[in-house]
Image (cartoon, rainbow, N blue to C red; front, side, top):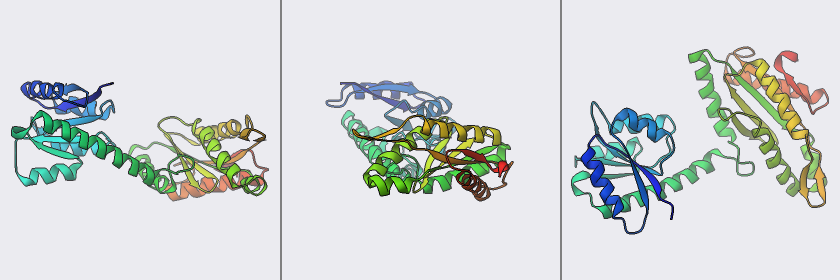
Length: 301
């Protein structure tokens, strides 16, 4: 059985040794314990995503574990956290849970069995929360982020453009004659074509960019620190990637599918997220009007 990595963030070496001894005595689950002795080291390791769960001490020098949880959550941490403290006050318990911890243990009462149970509980709850988070943010058919996430991300990226004076590219992509695919070959064919187009489109963007299903057969790509030239270049690559080879719908049916794309950038073409979306949308309609299977930048309309 492969052991899962657990991170202990605690400034007390003795606590590390005690916790390590507890974990080695587990009867069922197998874990490997790593240790961070400072707030700074702990936050870096926790955000690395290398750990199945984290045991976090309340006292960490000048700063405390509550601060660390809040900072980690604000930076997108998804690792389940079990909070450890010498205090027994309910206020600490509640504060830890409100900050994002999934369980709470009082140091003076900890046994190996309690840690094992707590880790098992936190891991299971973490898996459940991640599944719910995926359902809330992902489109079920394509696996891409959904429209609600697109709208949230656009607001977030607009703020980043203003704060750091970066650029933001937006590409809107639409499958050409998708209704014809459904009408001619049935909706099951459409349910094969759409995810495959989404995969090909998403493969063209960097890991820092976001690919989303905006609605129907329309996709949206947000491109961080990307100007107008970069956005239109990506839009053209997307068109070529989709057109490159037929999509195999069944053993006897392969369809030649193309897309149209419109590109715009902030602040070159727009000074807000909604205006940027409007510009990219107009460019997309221009691409459709020019015969489809092409990309048009807002400045080319």
